[in-house]
Length: 619
Image (cartoon, rainbow, N blue to C red; front, side, top):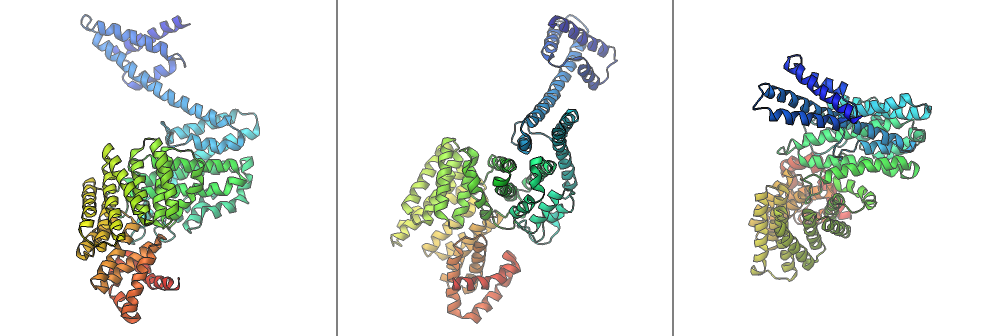
């Protein structure tokens, strides 16, 4: 059999060469078509051997036969089109394998199998064209299936794919246009404009998609949406009557997420949009699937498994980014809230995942966010677990980041010796592996911890602070060289706080103002609020009450917005000021500072300041 095939393929190669030399083959497509028609599946190795023999023979004749060069070019054309044939047939084989894997599972696991098939983390993730081919393969299987129930299920899988792609096409034109529907500064994805969900809800016909988008547009939880659906359509999932809708939902959300992230990533120097919103998009879409998992974990475990897998896929993609935010964790989210509220929901599902590099990175973000809201014990648990996993995975940047975060959290807990120890470990490790960003943060953390340790000893001697200030200044300079705005903000803010403690208020004001500016640019609300709070303290110390009230109002409001317990500290300072100047004079000064305050937190923020002060007094 092999010998006859060899003869056939030698003859086929010679025929293509002769036709080429006669000018009867004028395009690569013609060669490709001949190969498709003549080469039998599974016999490619025989063709390759024949082609290689002909090419070696022809190369040996280049100096003796006039036509050899033309023959070799014809053979190279055959080789190129054969490689193309192999690639395309491999894709088709992969799609066929994917279809067979989906159809081989139990009917209740079809959604889970489909989610696994469209995982964007695969080495060869399916493109839109390949998804269409997968749908065609599933439909062909359904057409041949004699079991009517299986045929219906497989048809729903195929239809879910095609409808998902169709729905995304309808939404693609409005992927980012909603961002420009409001003249206000873009800061989140809440119920107020700009809002993608309400616009997207108008563009889709699927009841499931429409209802989900309408729910999110009103800042209502996906848990409530899914809970309501459980009593209606989702009760029929066991018979897969809603299978098509779930497949469509998975595909649409995946492509919306990918489209937004791609767009945000292309705006790195835009203070309004940028990488921080890419991070928010990852976590916001993961949050939606996490909520759906919570609803179905008891009532529809197979459906819950699919939702859980989508969530993990999103987190895995996020954690694998080279710019994963190891040193910042508070961003605006699609829910209109700040991210640490959203991240709380990932605590329980992450416990079910084994230690991986991706898990360590998400835990790092969880820990940072918990520290921001004052949950220091919980933050330490997250960072210690992340540190252990990172060490096992040889993820040095993640290991160093968690040492740095543990240092900062220990300062919050007034364990300054522990904070110094962690920052020193981070500094040594960062220098060993050349992690400049980790080194910059370690230098700042070391100086910061030493400042508080010196203050705890009740010493105001400048020599006790000189080494700490030197570390802080080195960290700021290194952060500047790295071009990382968040780390620069962290360094300047820390240096400013140290100067406040040293009662060097002019230097403190300059550093804190720079820290606040960079924090706003990097969209780190916590550092911005913290910098404003200490700016208020510095201006209060030099008896500039107008600036103290303005900065104090900004710091209090921003820290309260992210549920940071530190808002009460600056509220205490404002309350003292109010008592010193009297209610009427305080309101007058606050009114004089209205314009700069509104410029940063808007009219609603300005109006909320007196209410927060009252809440502080009552608390």
